[in-house]
Amino acid sequence: MKGAAVGMMGLSHHECHVLALVQKWQPTTAYFLRKALTQRLASDASDSPGSVYPVIERLKRAGLVQSEEGGAGRRKSEFLTCTDDGAAAVRGWMVEIDQSELLPSDPWRTRVPFLEALPAAERGAWFLTLRTAVSAELEKLERLREAATELPSQLELEHARLATTARLAWINEAIALLASA
Image (tube, rainbow, N blue to C red):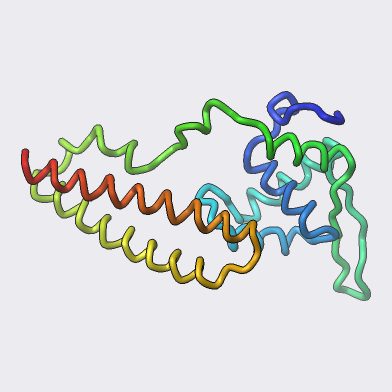
């Protein structure tokens, strides 16, 4: 499997995300991985046990992650590490440019074609509420950005800030278009 493209291995984005977390924090536990997923700004990362534990099992069966029991007494834990093939899969995931991800999914862009389902006044109110929520999120990202010291965190926060700024610009344009319609 060495050097195989992630898409050819059949791994999902979520599986690769979990695999990369194993590599970054190894040796680590499934519980730690669940908590680490909540610390990321990725909006599609699921930290539910029903999502994370089956992913870990698939990664182990694929030979990308290995486990070793550790700990003492009743508090035994399974510690996960990335195999050489797993590290190669992470590198492949990092550099892969998937055409389907160039225009990522967006829940608001999905809803907009159905605006007619709302009365005109509710359309405007929805966008105003959305603008308030997105503005608050942007302020939060600005505060986090000021505290970020490591380059990966700085890059993650800058991407989130710019994407949120673009969303806010789109919302403002939508409000203006609704007002002029």
